[in-house]
Length: 240
Image 1 (cartoon, rainbow, N blue to C red):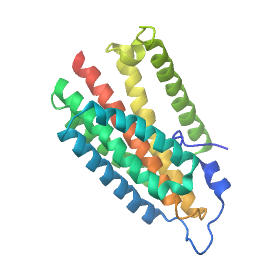
Image 2: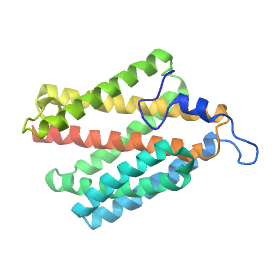
Image 3: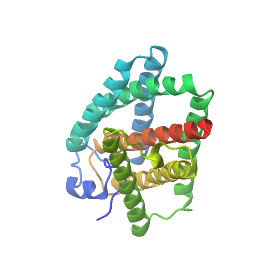
């Protein structure tokens, strides 16, 4: 069994869920794309609110609330039609407030980060649809391993921070710090390819209709991660 690096999306999920019954209908790629659009719009609405009304409350509400709702969605996938939109709004509140904080420190960083995120998303989609990247088992395993390794580094950095120790690999602006951020951005971008592939596989497997919301939610998680990593990278470059 192999998985997307995104914890919300895995091929095993489709196997456990099985095929939908005829009454509820089955997942389709086109309908999933519509759900992605809806969640992205809700994300933008939340971000707009906190951008024009910046507050620490939005950061904590978005970060903690979004984390809790994400966990609920992962463990209660059938609730995704309700929880996925809530997650998008909460995550939007977090992103808007964080983006405003970055914007006050680094001129033009938000426009560049948004443009790069959307550009990478489009490039990965075109690359996947054209077949330039073949989603093989080795490819999946490599991306999953890389994603897990990055998660371990971030957890270690978080724990060491309580003891006043800064992990330069994560926070530093030197060659290794910037190199690490570049690697993370690449891994996050390649996770999008795995997400596209699993959405297509879910539709072919006849997954239940609510999986359209669930897989759209998973893709939004990857996009948020990619955007935050690009922000981190650009801020390091501007601090040099």
